[in-house]
Length: 197
Image 1 (tube, rainbow, N blue to C red):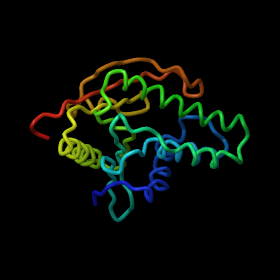
Image 2: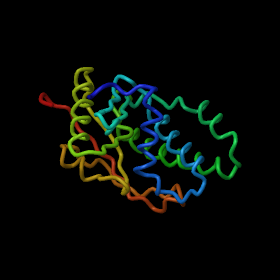
Image 3: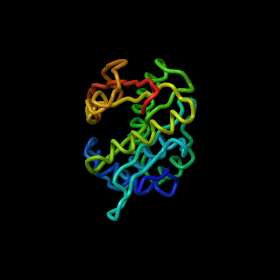
Image 4: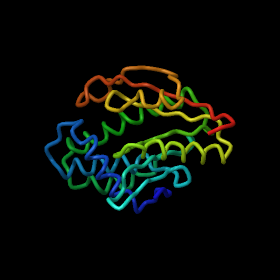
């Protein structure tokens, strides 16, 4: 079932995000790792209108969080509370990871306009799920008069996936902001929405 992503979906999306990217950073504290990946989902969940999930009998199989570039992160109050039990060093790891994400978002903003749509966080666990989510977001954007879509993907993602779906490369750069991740080749993609989606 394809439906809008809501706040009730954050915990499941965070679990799936951790399963997918949980080995990116060598964190031994599992509680901190859980906070990190929930923070990522909360950081990117900015618009219910453009965010979707696909579920089946086995649960959530994918989600795509998207928002107009003018929409900003509203997760700071949650994050401050969630990080309170951790040491300053552990808190810094999470904040540095979010700075890494923010830096990539700033690079996108330099190429786009506030009314353009940013595809923020995209996860697909089964074949065909990603295509359905992407088509739904593109249709929702078109219905709202949005003309351009942007996203960034680093080397931890299947970045070529977007090329195969009509997205063109707008910029490539190396993000060295987070030493724990190492140098990450990063691509910004854009797509202009035409008459047919």
